[in-house]
Structures are given as structure tokens and as C-alpha cells.
Length: 335
Image 1 (cartoon, one colour):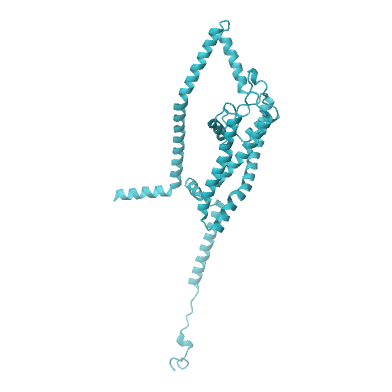
Image 2: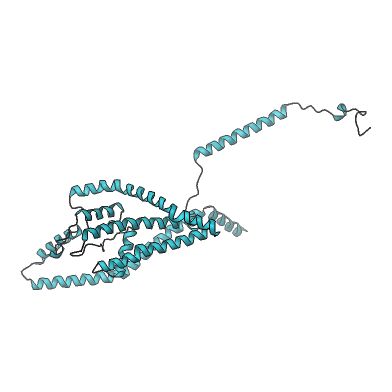
């Protein structure tokens, strides 16, 4: 008996706090996913890092042996200075001196990566004035970009998602959830083809050292706004039509980001995903002022009801007998 009562109380407790349990499982799942990613990345990339370190040590040792007049300390200072300049996008190589990082098209490309929060990191402001302006420019520009993207996506959603779904639903008689799933799938396939597969093939032809996987990797890292910066197009030595190429990449990034947001918003409007999100949300509570108004109305109604009851009890009741109003002679039944 006690065990059944305890089990019933536990079931009632879980059901009453279902959203909290779902949220706790979501947090736990996210943490486990982070740990899983760290384990996989560490196990896959650590051997390559160790191999690269050994190769660099071997090259450095061989260089010092071939140039005995150069001390290791002087070489270390030189390499440190060269690496610091490379972090700001300035290369010491002779064949890379023709590429400027702060001409107009490169600066436009940098501004687009800052406002879209992609931030490849291959180029960074060198001066204190540039760093201060970057802070102010980002503080104003990032909310402005979010407003711009929200307005553009809202208008595109009307013509790309809502109206086609309603048209098919009304004219073809298909259920709206089914039409929404099919439409979202087709839209995602078109987005992947037009903004991932085709651009990856183009980048693999335009960039000499990129294969198709590396080009596809760049497209995904860019349009997902991760922006690792290990692959940046237009940075090759003696790149043909570099200014026009940079401008085209800027347009591609902006359009691709808009399309990705349209696809994500389309999937978020699916009824199944809405129900899934509600599992982890807190239930909406009534505002305090509304609760106060409802409580006041309830008390007023209760007071009026009590007063009416007391008044009806205190008032003398006069009952008139039917026999006093109707005489036997006037009664049609008796007649």
C-alpha cells in the first residue's frame, strides 16, 4: 500500500514538473554532446598536430645546421615577429606582397564578416583607431544587421513559404502539416544545391589549393557564421580579378545568410517542431495585474451574492393560498 502511494506521488510529481524534467534532460544532453565533440576532435586532430610539430622541429634543426652563423635566439625572434604579422594578415613572403588587406573591396569584405558575426580572423585592425572604430561600428552595425535580416526574411517568407503552402492546401486539398514538411524539405534541398554544392564546385576551380571538400567546408563554415578563418578565398598569390572576386564573395555571403535564415524559419514554423520546443519551455503565467483584476471581480461577485442571499432571508415572505383567491364557484374544475 505504501509503495503504491509513493509511486503514485512520484508520478504526480514528475507530471506536474514535466517541463522542468525535459529542460534538465536537454541541458544534460547538450553537455554530453559537447564532451562527445571534444573527445572526437581530440582523438582525430591530436596525432596530426603532433606530426606537424615534429616536422617543424626537424625543419628548424636542419636550417640551423645549414646556417651555423645564425643563433637559435635570433631565429626565434625573427619567427615570432613574422608570426605576429601573419596574425594580422600581413605576410613576409615576396610573392604575397602584391595583395593588400585594406583596399576598398577587402575592407568591404571585412565589414561584411564583422556585421554578420562571421569573423574569419585572417585580417584584423592594426591601429588603435581602427580597433576603437571596429568596436563602435560593431555595436551599432550588428543590431542594425539583425533588424535588416529580420525584415528581409519576414518579407521573403510570405512569398516563399506561407503563400505556397496555403495555395497547395486550398487548391490541392492536402493537409497543411504535410504540405509544410514537403515544402521545407524541397526548400532545404534547393538551398543546399544553390549555396553549397554549386559554390563549392566553383571555389574548387577558382582556388588552386582547394579541393571540393575544402570548398564545401568553407561554404558551410561561412554561412553558418562559424568563420574559423582557415580557408579564405581570394587570398592566393596573384589572384586574377581579386577586387571583383572579393566583391562577389561578399554578395554571396549576404545572400547565403538570408537564405539560411529563411530555411531555418521555415523549419521553425513546422507544427512538429513547435510542439517539440514547447516541451522545454515554461508555461505562460498570467500577469499579476490580470490576476488581481480576476481576484477582485471574484470577490465582488461573492459579496454581491452573499448580500442578495442575506436580503432574501431577512425579507418576510407572503404566501397567498390559492384557495383564498379562487372560490369554489369560480373554479372551473369544480363546476
